[in-house]
Image (cartoon, rainbow over all chains, first blue to last red; front, side, top):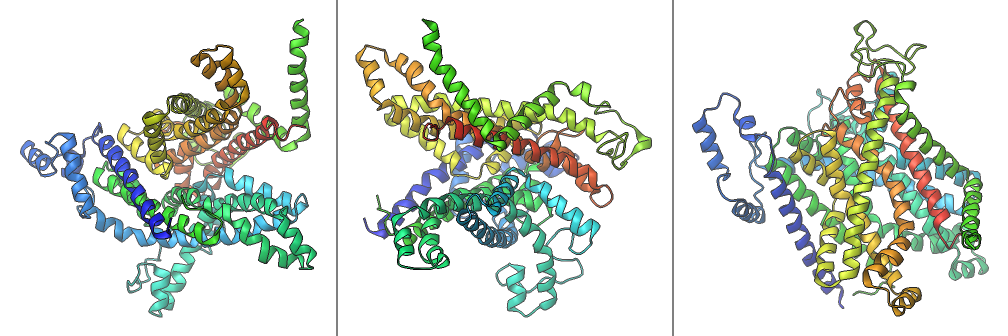
Length: 337
Length: 288
């Protein structure tokens, strides 16, 4: 099979997942016992106003037709209007998304770098004190509630030693950098706005580290076990007998091959990272889509919740696709089927 | 006669005990596991105060002889609340895992045995659940059902079963091809008998390992949903909810958010160690 055919097949396989997800959340959110209309219009609204609103939102039609209408809108990029912000859900999500992206990229850099580094050391020095230390560290990392870690860091670096800010993306006295990508760090760098750059850097340190920390543990565990397997392979022995140094063997022969399972698990990892991102955003009042979703849930804002779920599903599907393709590039031994 | 039958079983058990003793981390895991169950059972005897007793003169007191972990914004003793909170968390963790295990096992076995269209439909549904950040799904479901610990448990059970369905299905499919199943078939065992007496029990080892890891995970995600504001509602002494309120007093009362989190960390760590240990003990490749 040609690589393009494979990619096409993978793209097509996303469709049933997206339909399933939208159906599930749509039907779920229409058996809600709460009363979103009163919430949206306020307790003073008259019966007529409520009825008009009911009709305007299409709530008087049968569920299956409402779903059909909704799906049609989604396909045209219309995720409906948020009951809470009164804005289009898609625009809201797009406005909140760069913050999430910035946080996730930061955390991924942190956890991939430290995770692979620690996992490799742990495998090479198997059963030595370093290995035990790394393993205990990753066990604790896996068992720790991420939001609690965030609060502990805030107590330390905001409460006791007031070095870092207590939340948000920018201090209130700093003007936003001119938006180009929406990522404050990148935008301020591109426009040469050093004040904003420094301020947003200070703000992103704690959330990134918090989010990254719990996943360093996961990556280092995976890297360790796959590295151990690779180190037993014949080609490693050959490389050693050729007289290559220990470092050379690891860098040129072992590391690349040991990363294959880590990349494969990247999809699961990313899903977990998304979960962690939501919790981290709430912890640090980081204005990303996770915080937006939490606020929408508190308000029973179905359109926003559904929009959020669909956007997450889409991001997730695309990332998995990219990971599958990366997998093919890293390991040419994989057969397409 | 029966002695001869029991002998190999006893030998296996003695060997398992030996393996447990060899692994200090597993011992720690078992210790935490038994410890937290005892704390939950004997909560009224361990906690020095009523967890909901309001004591206005003693608001936000730091840890002291009277209040080991300090007091909260209503003067309630945080140590007592954490002790009682273990009941909520353990009950939730076990309920979610057991529901997920039962539902997932039934679906997995049906899928493996019926096969065909039903199998692909069930596994497609499982894939949809698995191919999605489950906290997002759990958030949406809890939002629909309404806030509260019961609905959190329902939501997490709904998103949790596919793991077991997949696990049991793949186990059952590989066991089905084993020679001893063929032998029992030749002896005339019915299909149901083969499934429930011969295949199902042999699928259980990885399921038990997964379950012991999942109790910890379920406790953690319950706390997370409570933290978001969807799970247990204050003044229930749930650990995640306590951290949320404690976070409003981070700068002046560090102990409030700190201790419930340490408790979650210790309990989840215990279940993780237990699961890792069980995996090593039950894995036939590592035995002898």
